[in-house]
Length: 441
Ligand SMILES: [Zn+2]
Image (cartoon, rainbow, N blue to C red; front, top):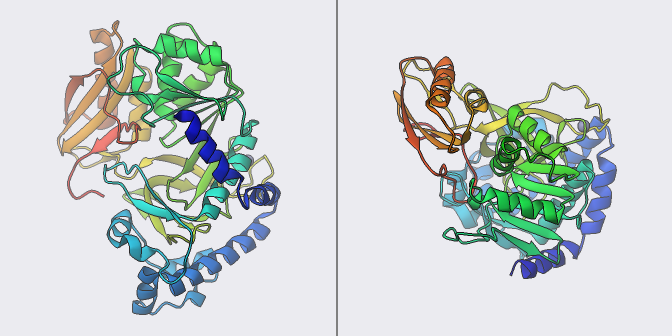
């Protein structure tokens, strides 16, 4: 079954404009800021004009708010338009699609971290553009390419949850890929999983942060580091903390390349070999708006006419780069740290908010800890879910509590809950902080 899926993907990839996109994306990454801005603004005018003319939701919005498509000439003019949030996309659905044109489009849904999926449509051309961007601005930057031996660890349900005993993987012959289930990474299963990875000998690993970090910690704890030695590891979908990056790079003896994108094709951010997180200007316009004492990433997609999304609120925290040019020499703008979802915050009884970037530091030096999650459902209490190794001792717990108190103060109650594995989202991701406080976005 895994092999059939691979062949279908290869067919979609090889049709049409893929090769053309590859060549252009490769060249444009070396353009200077001005050239890229000119290209991006032209693409922006084109998609705004298209949305205002062909998409019912935007036709009505532009007419009601007396906005003319020609008012939006550059990215700086986007402030004329209201934001679009996920709830509106869920409600409006079909009204965000062009109604008078026969566009070839494929329906998809995102996992939706809140559990409620967001439906969206994409053109085959947007799919090809996305693949081409991934190849040129992700794989090539990491010195790997499509077709290289790949271990992939993500939330695809490839092995039944109830399965006890190996294999916790599927081998995809057409793509030279080994898929490993992110749902089966327990101490009991990991020896067999690391054996299988070592035998397969991947050139690259593509994984969720939590999944590859779980394996890395196991390899370090059991003195098995560098039994698997890929060229590069590509991660995305979850916040990558510096200490997690350090663990993964030590366990596998190679560089980790971080990336950020959504299912909805609105933006593409990827890391170069010099550590710069670059925004692909042709893919989408990225803005950073003030939100809850920090910044939220808002993106306008430029490549998909099946469902244009203008000023789409991603719900993810990100900060603009410092404006200096990356030492790799590319003209593509960079972003600062991307740190989790806007709603991933603990609020203390004193009213201060503490985000995952600082909370994660409380967990990084705790011995024998496997997985952790903080859930807050009332203002003066948090519940910790902890999955621990068999040699976890009371001193480890005391150390963790002391570290948490440094960040959250002494008045908040902390309940401890020991579990076999912390809950994952429907798409298999892990969140360090889950806030269920009402009135928060
Ligand atoms: Zn760079």
